[in-house]
Image (cartoon, rainbow, N blue to C red; front, side):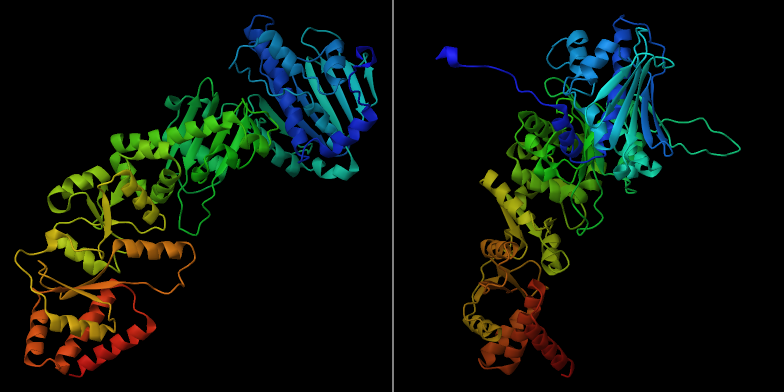
Length: 613
């Protein structure tokens, strides 16, 4: 049987592979320019590396890349003064598809040490052939740093090439001349090329110059400037960067006139090996898009915009740049979704965000309190989604009180020990619930503001993590600190009357002696019932029949309640008593929630009637 088995290698004919390259090599054709410029950048990086190793002496050279457009000749040329190629190298790396010279170079001069980053971009050997996505002919003119003879390699889009060994290039390096097809004439537009260079090459490590081929007849000829920043902010140490540097970089990259709330400078070493800067943007209002933008780079080469997979989903509002040389240049979303390295990057980012916030609380609390209102909802959501993040942030979460103070959970509970131990009192609307808030504040009880959709889930989680902790809305209970000493007697006549005027036979009537004598009565509903109602609204079930179970707390210290009792004692059917009870009920209801249309009409009728008396 073994004698009948055959082995061999797959062969591909160039006339079959080139049509595939032209159409399918990259999803976006404009990437061809990134690939060609990246190759030029590698050529310079290799020569710099050889100089540093003592294999060549070009340490004082000014390396550069020139991109030149010639509309008349219909060519786009990328030139470098890098390492160049000999005839053997040209035939090995250019005449053979998918054989990367970068990998050979790294293997020879960088070794195989794990975690070592060479700064060389190309690894696959296909990038050069992306030129044929927009060209029907490509010339490569090259001269090796070894002073070997110059060469001109010409190849058409059918895969046929020729090498001219008599061609003279002035100086070492390589020119890639792309003859743009009529179908791709848009790539002969200066604006288009400049736009691509700005997008993909703004931070490449070698100076890039763009010549649009136009003659500029200015009286004053300015020295050309590189279009890129070879040392972007993320490549520098945080100690070298000022606040103004970070803000300027943010404006440059994201064109956002608003200053970011804070930023995090990332510099992860082995085994992660990535750098970057993440910003928390200022959100102007709740209707503004909450989607951030993270730009992914590979050794300073732009790879993709808004890569969500590399940021934890609960931190997608972040903006920034990440330079990840451990990811392939032509990374796919499916690759990112199932990659262990990406998972570790996410974990690292989460830790750094928590470290940044806890550090701000400890070292610059006024600044932390200033931004807390902008970040609170997002940080609470992150705590809901990530247990490790919640554990790191548990002592740094703030609560804002109705009088504008910011307190941590422990600070609030320490202050509450004497009056309401282990209980948070909160309001979801400090204007609508102002009557309740005022009663609590008069007794020295701080009320915190929890007015976002996510707060209900967040405090439920906090209660789950701390078994003795309770969160009660101000209209859910009467704190013991608000009650006066002494026995309180119930009044069955008043109880019956409030059930009558409210139209609620299931109304619970309680009698309490409150320290705030100015309030005749307030309405309560249990925290559990209210949270259930809020949850139904969140899940789009707010149109279900209301199961509102109200309790009216009658203040026996209030003169109106005393008067009501006197009227009922004199006449159980007193119309004056009924009118007074009705007005107390409507005012209590108005303090508790927004009135329905029918309730508002009834309230106004009662009010206008009182004016005439």
